[in-house]
Image 1 (cartoon, rainbow, N blue to C red):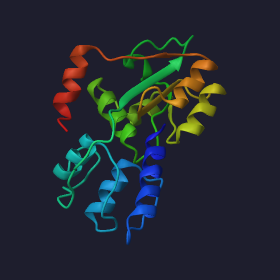
Image 2 (image 1 turned 90 degrees about the horizontal axis):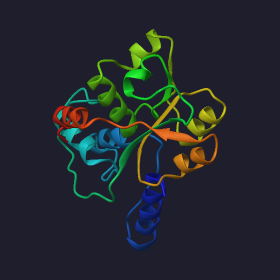
Image 3 (image 1 turned 45 degrees about the vertical axis):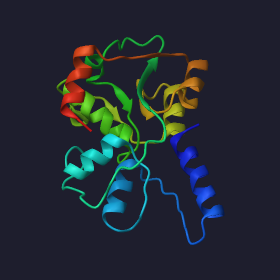
Image 4 (image 1 turned 60 degrees about the vertical axis):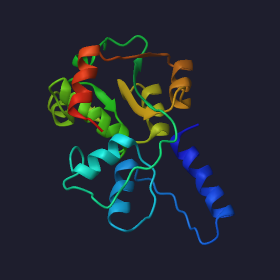
Length: 194
């Protein structure tokens, strides 16, 4: 079940069981939800712990500190997953510097994850584009279609495991996951303490 499906079920229970609660779902993602809560447009927003920490401090994807937020619960653990077609020549993040990638929508937490990992490898989305690659800021459904049609080399997502998008891609065209070395993991965690 995807994060959005978990959130939708929680929203349904809140609407049905708690008098005076009104919920709504937007496509903005974890970063947008932090901005909405901080700005007073929402009282509760779903996000990830590290995104809330970055928002509170005003680092990463946040231009200024979002001091009017608090992280109060973690619903489930998530993993950042990076898949390439099984027959791809891409073996590491170093091989993605000119690839066609889909890291998620612009204000999704997975996209922020992707940026922080690429930064640890010494390049950015802008560098990928300069090297002839593309960065598709689309959702899971579009990413699946792009990979099946051969239009992306890499699909990235921060989500639960197992995740339906990756299971579908494993069925066709077949995928392989790209991992991080322990050294890079330590560097990324040190650079993103949230």
